[in-house]
Image 1 (cartoon, rainbow, N blue to C red):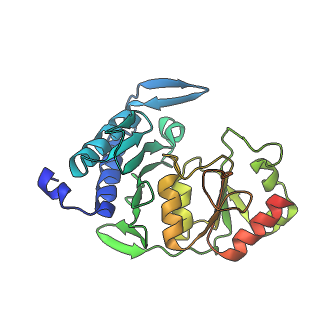
Image 2: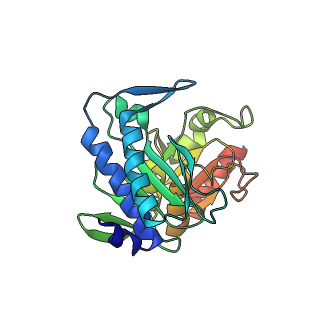
Length: 264
């Protein structure tokens, strides 16, 4: 897109264009030789993370030059007094990607606003303007419709575990009630949140603190909320500054069942 065309886009279109720009880089570099950059604690970034973030930032800086941006790899950029901030995770599922697993996501969200999650390999881009949520594939936009019909629940088993020992995600998987109702999945990427909004997962559960301002989770949370999912912390409380992790469920019944297991 040209500079002029980017400037005329609304926030939802900007988020979508930025996520798709990052996804194009992730897709192009897949299978190639990747330099790794150690981030400590077993975490790392790759050339794909860095280059995808640059592509996303190019779109955001061009389309919304007055806004600030918080990128996973480059940190915060833009004026400190900016009224609006974009949250960018250029490659969620870096370890998956580095070992040849295609389960990854590119996340772009305007804090408390529009958001987009692009799947570089399925060609799907999930997006929301904050009111409704859709998925775009092959030029066609379709409303996201959550459903628990799959009975698949994605559980994040990656550290840290700030709410242990009171809550351990792995303990949830061992509960007879969970096994009787659901089937666990662990994809190790927040693409799973988009799948809850799209009806490909019944729910998603992760430990953590306040995830609303996280570059990893903000876009997926926005999608789930706009699609009509039930979204709370693992304690059942609303998300926010004192939040504890995340439970995103396709419907109230699924959320109630999971909360009863977690509290039990």
